Image 1: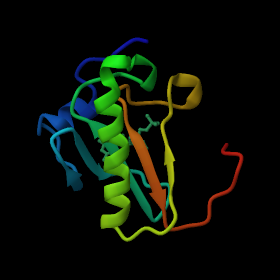
Image 2: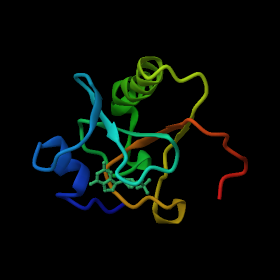
Image 3: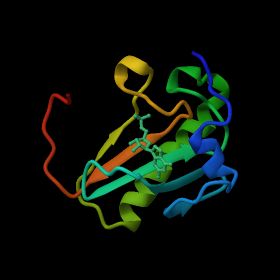
Image 4: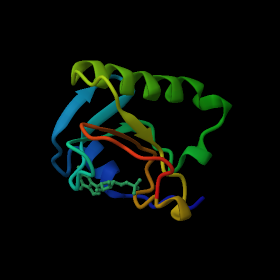
Length: 115
Ligand code: 5GP
């Protein structure tokens, strides 16, 4: 998939654009979504640049594991009992920023199937 270099999340990672940071470790950065879809809406991004989930390979096992663990750590940190994680992969899945990210949503009742 096409990778748009210099996208907004790369700029946030580089400190060129501010964010409301909630968590950071050696592998990931997490910050509040600028347009929240739930009372809690946090974006988790890997520090290594991958455009989409589909761009990850066997070499990214640690990246993906750390990325998932970050969601668990943030949910604990925020005291979330119940939450939804979402990775939109590709334009038809409504991915708009092509730097891999996970949405962590909580604070309201969610329905299924998603829209
Ligand atoms: P996607 O649609 O790619 O899965 O999600 C991209 C998310 O990034 C959207 O929920 C959007 O609100 C969020 N977003 C876009 N630009 C910014 C920004 O500059 N700062 C923050 N914190 N979130 C952003």
